[in-house]
Image (cartoon, rainbow, N blue to C red):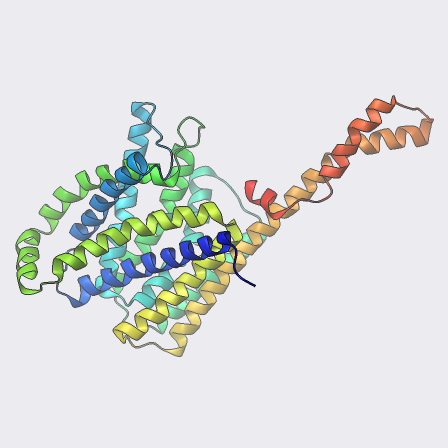
Length: 362
């Protein structure tokens, strides 16, 4: 049976998402660890420059998504704040790749749900159900196990990777707070359009100050290696492609599908990086990463189940008028007008079968 056009389209998006994400990750590792290009801040600045230019071209000329304009100066300040946190996350992740294997980097990065839940509680006092917090235990335990079994463990690299993961989680929580009003909400592509130029303005002077010989070494590498500029260009374009494909996959699939695909992507990246870079791995390290991924899956399933339970409770609650009318008739033989009974029918019908799509919208 031939695949439908929708199935082919979504499959193409997933392939683009995987290749972009894994490609930029592996190229970052290659440039920063194997190629002599040891400038993670400048590399991040290149990524943000590409995102700024390509976002503008995609939104303004190609109309990939409608352009959302900024409404006020406070909204711009909020986006600038998010951009700073975003910069810290990306720079920290790139720095960690200088010292850590991609496989271990991905294991630590998988703890994002733990930090998201932590910051959500600390900043907004939002509490999850105990089952959700219980699912986070193996997420943390897996990283502890993987750390103990990592042959190339580097303390500074580990701290930077953990900091980058925490910053990424903090940005998502902060974004939910700062851009919570309907008038200020932006989709991820428009948010990237406004964050990228701000990030460039921050990263360029930071790179020149903290990486003083960056231009000299980059030009020298460009003369010595004829593919240097091509690699840097492809790497920067992939950084934007990763953001665009992530947005499109999110738009065209469900939250559950996205979670499963995201975890599978991490596993694929680990396998490919081990094959390419030949970094040593241990059974303990693989076991720790597996425990972390299982914990992330359990966390997502716990949140989904709790939302489903709330939906059912909400659905049952809407049937109160039906039971009120029923018991009033049984106990007192009191009859309502036929129009009253008809208005109760759609309430009972709508409450009988909540769907997965409904759960996602909660």
